[in-house]
Image (cartoon, rainbow, N blue to C red; front, side, top):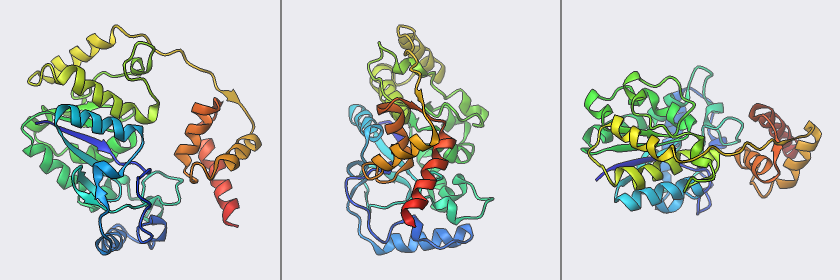
Length: 304
């Protein structure tokens, strides 16, 4: 049996417990904030198994990959550490995405990083123990921010464990342990091209790549080396062309803010979803840092 590691999502099928909003945590040093969060977690009841709580295409693709391969599904959760897909968990609002009102990083000192927070939750040790104990391939299908968050933990793996890791996604993480650079499968934007069986958006790229690898490569050759697996992925993608780039419409800050106001309720005020609406649905071009600043202005405007 293999294992698939995916990321949690802000979208959940059950409304979060009022006690579990990161915005309500006190500011303080890492151990204090982690202890305050842990205390709140112990006060609430779980609502569903993790595989049935998170929603959104990226998570659905990961569940499909795990189901197809009868693999253990693990979730890298910003609020819970590392969670097995079958473990019942509470619904919560905590993220490490900066600019979100429930970003826990805003509660911590400036010298704290996302990896520090996740380690304080016990995620790093749990991940290492899981991979070291797993006798078969472990597929890590995480977007760049989450792969960056677990990178220090992965660096602690033994050489033998590293040889069983396959990384799908996380294309913009350049500081991985050198032993794990070989574990990167060569998925690129051809996965989004017209011949791809699983096109999608950047937000679900890693999960789609993991699913494609599980169904089209690993299922046919479980015992292959990482080099052979990478060669098989490249052989499949060599038949695909890259997507035709779309040029987004350029608009002013005032126009972007008007769009944000219009879609605020629909996106529940979430910056990532608002940006997806802007780019994917409205074909409006906006650099992410610029958008986060404009969205923050609207958030302040709504509080006043």
